Length: 293
Ligand SMILES: C[S@@+](CC[C@H](N)C(=O)[O-])C[C@H]1O[C@@H](n2cnc3c(N)ncnc32)[C@H](O)[C@@H]1O
Image (cartoon, rainbow, N blue to C red; front, side, top):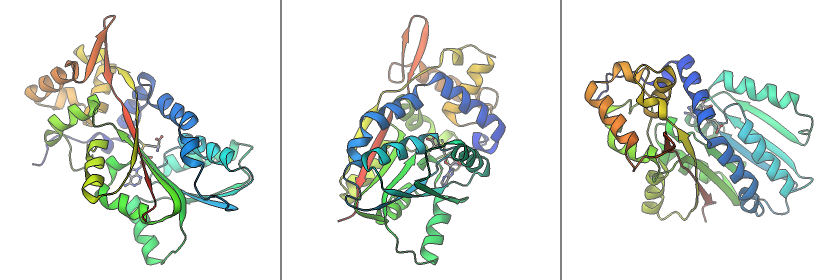
């Protein structure tokens, strides 16, 4: 069914505002950092053992903060190796911010960066056209599969690029989180064509159906959404946009849809209420795949 609602990603200004607010309100980046510092090093310990150069591909890297943290752990696990880091992102603004950050960091001389302003599928097309045979040791796609047309095909392609002992890391909203409950209930009424509302539950069932082994790690992430329940509150409206991925959801959704979403957000399946605040279960999950055998 075609939705009459406008997708949030089509209004970059509003998307950035609501995303920044989300980051302030949610512990997502902190939880991702904790995972990178506490769990990722063991995952990365075995990649490319004995090689003098490690090949990394970042898919949908954004402004690169999370990428650089992962690269730092990779380098600590494999001291002295050179890293060839290929960055893929269609947003020139994000790529530019990433480049600026790299230019300001003093300790990256053993890492080379190749910038690709393109989507994951454009990268795949280019890779196939040029018949590239290079293999990758570590590929990551953090909070990106929502934006690709066919997440299953994207995973298959990037997994096929892994060298033996290589790892593919996928991070997304957990299927068990409030995101999962909200999106499973309402996705057909939101902007499904532009935003896939995919969670790790979808990815895990796809991998299970294909018999692809994987490990997964749930990251506990909370978000204070109290203002969503105060009509006319600007913070609440921006947060609602981010939760539903709809531009100006409060004003453009039908009253039935708006009430349904608000009821679900307050439901114990999605949130807990404590000290007068409503805390949304925004858990993420990381899925790690090995190279195809
Ligand atoms: C939510 S951000 C995540 C950024 C970063 N990985 C992080 O966790 O901080 C999603 C990123 O995916 C990029 N993106 C959007 N569509 C894409 C596509 N089809 N292929 C690859 N990247 C895409 C966006 O430009 C954006 O930088």
